[in-house]
Image 1 (spheres, each protein chain N blue to C red):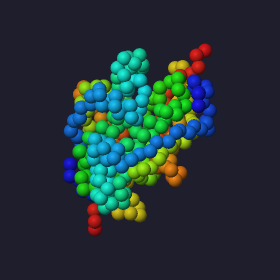
Image 2 (tube, one colour):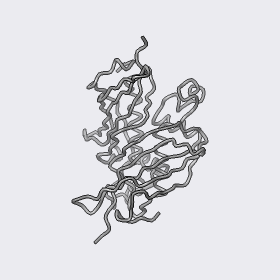
Image 3 (cartoon, rainbow over the protein chains, first blue to last red):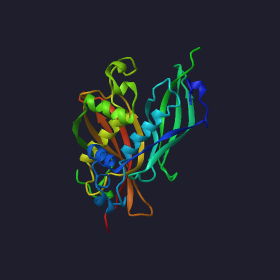
Image 4 (spheres, chains in turn blue, yellow):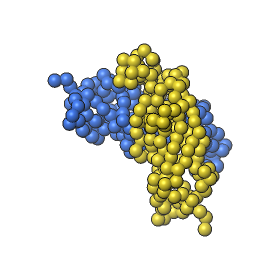
Amino acid sequence: MTEQYLEDFRAGQTFRSGRIRIDANRIKSFAAEFDPQPFHLDDTAAQKTAFKGLAASGWHTAALAMKLAVDMNPCPRHPLLGLGVDNLRWMAPVRPGDTLRIESEVVGLNPSKTKPQGVVLIKYTLYNQNNEAVYTFTPIGIIPSRPK
Amino acid sequence: MTEQYLEDFRAGQTFRSGRIRIDANRIKSFAAEFDPQPFHLDDTAAQKTAFKGLAASGWHTAALAMKLAVDMNPCPRHPLLGLGVDNLRWMAPVRPGDTLRIESEVVGLNPSKTKPQGVVLIKYTLYNQNNEAVYTFTPIGIIPSRPK
């Protein structure tokens, strides 16, 4: 959990986060600000949708996953920053009261040919308290090389 | 702006959103909850980072883009829901006081071979008040076919 530089990462390395709980009030207030659709805003309305009940906005889920990722940052000397994200998928609804955690794995390492840094691809998967995978994303992270 | 079914979409169709302003206090409070890193939390600390000043969390930007997308929903009879997102990229920092808007374009249409629905790929690009593209994402949206 204290990798420092690009050279410290290996494909297949794994990291685990702490846990975070999501409640109905925050699901609704997040949705009111950013994703005001009935299945994120109101229990009764949500029952009549494909979700069959209140579910968190996928972007609320994504933001909570970022919080877990920052707290577990596998490379704490460097910011957790990415050019973007690949393979962002929502697999199952996140419900009020769910407790979420991340398992992650290094799936790619691409040293730059021109700069003292490289791309580290870490696949993050978010699980609920039933060990059901609900969300996954693979940020395109930039990590500096070890100084010579 | 009132497409109803899969058959109403055409590659190359474009849509434009309204505008939304982001301020420093919300950048900091969003970051405190979801992405607590110095360049999103504190002006002075942010000056010393690669961002050279306070910048919004990429997930805050993503959430604001969702709000603009929901408000402009090109297919208002159906929820704006996706299996996931492809090609999510942050191209430039979002700063306090920026005013953001979306331009979007239908870039893919894939009718299902087995169900009365299809995938509509709409590429959304978020611009700031200087017409600089700051963020893009392409949700994998499911839209029903017109009833026979």
